Image 1 (tube, rainbow, N blue to C red):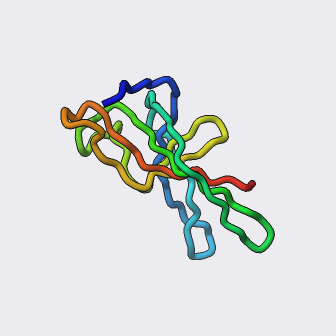
Image 2: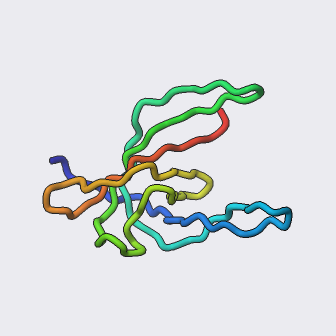
Length: 112
């Protein structure tokens, strides 16, 4: 197993739904905490829309492990933020047999 380099400080965020006043809900994001991470990109692809092209780039983001149920353990549906960059968490698994690290399979979406 190659060494893990946790060199990027990311903010872990949880989605929050609030009534929008019209019978629906608006989603906002609440900061849970910060995590040091290693961010490795995968192969990207472009998806065409009516007026915009979206670049979809998968990422493998490695963080220190935390017990299940802990606020410091990322789960699918949350996101990691670094400044204006957003990484949606799609899945989370242990990276190593000892359970020292977690890998978050994520996707960054931004207009191209």
